[in-house]
Each structure stands twice: as C-alpha cells, then as structure tokens.
Length: 359
Ligand code: SD4
Image (tube, rainbow, N blue to C red; front, side, top):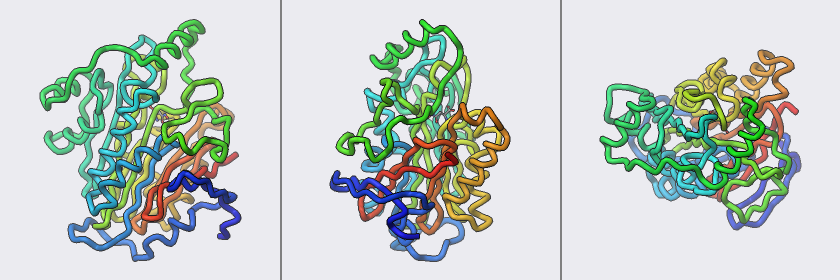
C-alpha cells in the first residue's frame, strides 16, 4: 500500500505530517517487528519492538504514560493499566469520575483488564472510586472472581485502600446533565460523529478534543499493548453512556465484548454503543477473525459490517469502533461511521490515525 493513500498526524514532535488514508495498516506499524507470531506467553525478553494503541485522541496522552513503561522494557499489563489511568485522572474529560452521570445524576464507572495468560478482571456500576481500572486489576489478581459490581465492587475497592471520592459532578458533566434534564427525553447519544476531521484537530492539545457543540463524543478509553517479551495485554475504562438508565452496563466491563486478549492471536478493544458490541461478542469476534488470518483492520471491519447488517436502518444512529493489535505488532482499526481516531505509540513516536469506516 502506498504512503499517499494514508494520512496520519505525526505527534512525536507535535509537527503534522499529512498523508491520505484509506488503507488498513499504517506502514510504520506493518513493518514494525517482522517476526513470526509466537504461540502463548513468553517470559524471556525477545527484543520485540513494543507497541501501544489507544482509542480516540485521548489515547495520545495515555500512550505517553504507557510508553514510559513498555518502552523501557516493562510489561504490557503495567503499561495498559497506567496508560488509561491518565485519562481516568483527567478532570476536563469524559472518562472516569469527570464523565457524564446516569439519568439520576450519578456517575457510575465500568472497567476491565486482561493479560497474556487469559487472566482478567473487571468492575461495573462502580461509584466514587477514581481508578476503576486498578480495582479491575485487583479483582483479577486478588480474588477468585472475574467481575465485581456496584456496592460489592466499591466495598472491595475500599478494602484495598482506594479512597472514597466526593459524590459530585465535574463542571462539564453538571452543565451537560442540566441541559439533558431540560430536554427530559431519554435518548442516550453515544459516540456521535465528530464534525472535525482528525487532520483539523490541534495536535498540541494532547487532551481529548470536544465536538463543535462543546460535548464529548466519547466516554471511554481502551488500550492494547505488545511488550518486548512478546506479550499482549488490554484495558478499557468508561463512565458508560451519558444519561443511561441507572444500573445500565455497557460492553466495556464485559470480557469478550469490550475487551479481549489472546496471546496466540491478538488484542482488541471496542468503543461505541456497548449494547451492539455485546450482541456480537465484539472484541472476541475480532480476535477470531484475526485467528483466521485477517489483518487487524480487516478483522475489525468484518465485525463492524456484521453489526451494520444486524442493525439495518438503525445502524445510522449508532457508532461502533474497534482497535486491534496482533502478535506481530501490526495495528488496525475500523468504525461504523467516520469520526473515530486512535493513537499508536511505537519506537518511532506517538501518532494519531484517522480510522477507516463504512461511510
Ligand atoms: C459503553 N462502549 O458503555 C461504552 C461507551 C463508549 O465512548 O465507548 N463511549 O457502551
């Protein structure tokens, strides 16, 4: 595939390099490692070039934190946890406790994490805890369970020493909620189409970019990484759909839907309308397509097309996006509609790519 068919923003030095994009795999990623896929996990250093991939422009800042670990020979699991914590911490954003509340005015958080040995942990409907991703990791490492929800998840977090945060809304979330209450109509809008092309975003703003109407167009960050040991891990954390019904869970805390990692094949994270990702066991379905020999982006496209077939006319009202990374360090993405972007950090820098989509 020729470079003139792609475009990406080169944010390593915050200068913009522009290429056209229609292709699946950015060349810089395609040729990254060149080694054969390995089977199962590895514990010895294989000198593989690490890669970290994260959803949305928020992924740029998250990638930097992940790269500090993975670029220095650390583990993918530590990278994906610490990477998305940056976004959970962001007071001016859409993920974590600053995110939009449910329709009763409470912020409820979901998160999941998975390593190269099929270890996984998740929390859902968790309130007043700043770092749900770290609680998910503790569920994975310290309990016999995979998933804890609601009050039980919060009790576990407190017993692990996580502080109970105030029950307040961020400034942005408060005004969005007040506007939503005025309309008083129950219609969660999720991942609405970005009105600005990725190439028009200000690359000096590593923080997430807002839509032209001042709203965030996403509430989630997902990250997948390959470390120098040849091991994959993934993480996903979200405040879920804004103004959702109380108690609603999306795909993000569900292993196999919002996140899946198989160290023989690849790692996948989803963002978008969680209900429609759950319906097709989205992340797991993408991994299975890679197992059949598809490239990461082709595998993502296959599942996105399936969702469009299932949703028919209604597909125009939702957004679903996947990012995928295989054992060779090849990354790719695909979305139902345009407007989705994702960040890839390799030894060559941290770059934002506009995802291909069905329209
Ligand atoms: C959910 N998939 O709760 C999440 C939402 C999301 O960007 O990805 N927002 O359904």
